[in-house]
Image: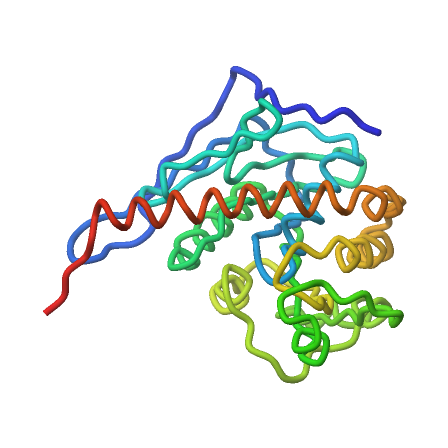
Length: 274
């Protein structure tokens, strides 16, 4: 297993940019990079259904030879960090794999209400690196299994189906080799914002069926298989299945803590209307 390097180098290059202007106030974000690999593919995963994006990117970071190359934040991100097994877990971090020229954006922060701001930062990152492609990882609900599971993971014998959507027609033939076109759905979150706003850099999304809103390592393992084919990698997904309970417990604990901190912040700083 490759050792995860989480120590950024000292020669950090910071760029601070205004993201939005709301009622005359600039909302500021900071993109912090200590390495700028050009022409890379950016693989991003934010918490969503089944936590597919977060689990998959975490697994890639731990099983590819990667180094931490930066992080980013925005002004109104909740000032909450996670500690897991005595180590700091940044809410959003960037790792780089030289072999496949991949920048992996790993997020443990559920960006409810901040999707547009985060998408601006992802776009800024992509342009800064002259990225070849942005690839988003998401879960999509299998309604029958969700209803049967009632919030718990249902172990289905059927292989989860994988779907794709892209704003780049030239990517369709390659994506069709690993997934089915997404014909009818609602794409929310950072992925939805990126697909709408990003016109200059090819942006695609892979969706895999999940049977629960809880962490779903089984579906994430299938996502790894799809990424292997699409990106030409050889990452073995079996360790993910063997450590499924540990992965799922970790992400559930971190997200529960983040939710609690966010709710506490909202209580201390209420918004009044009317």
